[in-house]
Image 1 (tube, rainbow, N blue to C red):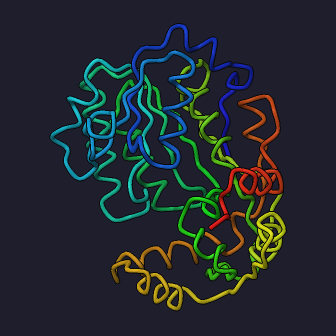
Image 2: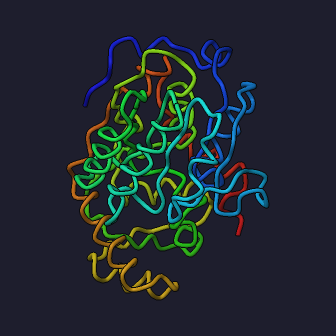
Length: 296
């Protein structure tokens, strides 16, 4: 883990007074939506890029169509890059290199890249962007498993159904609240001292999926049990939900690789950037339950 000196203590509000327009790629996704909302609240001009473009209140941006990237970046000063579906997929490194070249040509000043913690292939994509973006300031934010995957993501139906089927074995994971991630991203986009930094963001405590299921059940007011499965078995589960065979296989292999215990350690990078502790998983479950996440 590397954290550039001077990052802690910068505040988003101070930086926002001198920040121009920010492009948020995947602007309607779980992280992009939160980053967009925070930038707008700070008074920072923001463009939410998505395939829906103006229909979703933003600008057209499609990771599969490079022809529209220059227009989306025109006149911007910074960009939040959240690659879909994941930086570890084949072709991601090429897309990052292409985006870096377009970003440099557009005169972009700053890029904050969302990456996966402990993903070797994601690190290859990071390096491809770093090598292509020239003088553009790059900050990399490597995230632990999102806590919100249980409340608004792929595992919501599992929680509602009472069985958390997943290929994580008995490994512990320091689940990260996406609100903390969004706050760190906005700080890096709008403040000084983050250029060249690589932040590894985690929650303050590691839990096994069995422990997480128990906490989710208490907050949701319904029994939730963890059912560990192999990667291939989980791929079959995904295919049963309509995920294509190749994508299901990739996701199952990715989860099994990431959740083998090598990411169990926590970090203090959220506190180093924001000056406060990362949100506890118990606090996340209580807030999600209060907001009606598991009323279905």
